[in-house]
Length: 444
Image 1 (tube, rainbow, N blue to C red):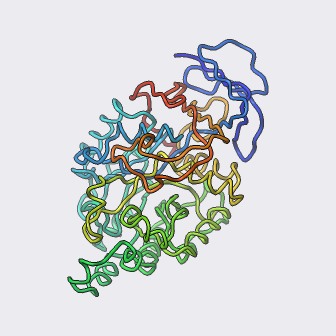
Image 2 (image 1 turned 180 degrees about the horizontal axis):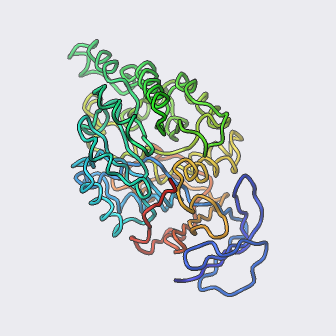
């Protein structure tokens, strides 16, 4: 395996930033020091650039198997490494849904050949697959996903007995999509068929409203407290839900944790006027006050990690009328740039970005030897040119769907190099090869 020497970069790790060299050997971070003067197979000059651990995105939808006309593990993990993500955790609502150990294994088999970066896949829960769920090995599967509210796919778990059994018997982390289904159904039912056909995306936060989110999230938290479950509540979208989480324990000791997604921080309900179905997602993007409060909770550690919920659909699907257009938007290539926009506005430090996108996902999921630039850890590293300005456009969007709600926006900061397991997989717009990622391991 080739050795890599990175020289003269500004390194961000464990709340500190300092100039350093990095020596990578045999897939690991061999040495980190102010000056390393030895030869290596690959030399990278990083003067004026920033070095950080690879991003760990704990929530993506890469659509394989069954929905590869939208995206695939190959295409979306390729986009991920171009944006600085070196590990992903993918959701089970594919076709077929990953509701058996065999179907889950099939996804791992695809990733072992096609993934550009490290990977894990959530085992899916349904109303009637508890025995399959209990076979999941938490040492090499990131967790169990429960849709406590319908979204893309047909995996809604709405049976009270099934939920009690899952929360009481599953020994590993449970991740939840929380929206109360009956609230959503009743909200939609209040509109006549004639009105529904004329509805636009700005109705989305009215249909999938604050009440739906809080009612479901609080129910999940109550179940977790009752049974001592490790619970991770995904994509918090309301300020009311923030009362369910605290910052009185170190992340490694928390049993109930939470996630914010970049789109709930970056967009708000006013953006439906210009972006429409492009930002239709579940849970819905809501009024600006919610995003601002979620951002505060991110800074004070009530919110634990930043993710994307990357969920691509074709442009033709997104052009359907509101009630028919699918929910979800593609983001994994641009998550770091969204957070850098907040950095340049003085709203968050680079050290905090690294904490929430790299360190915290590693700690929360107890990932083995990743998420930090520590000697001995796996060499998942990105190099960023902080001053390079560029614009998101069709030519540089790498998602298979070919579009982004960020299209036309100017960005400051560009990933120039991505290293996965000690191998340079992306450099200055060029890719090497897929299949270089590894299956994530967990210290449970």
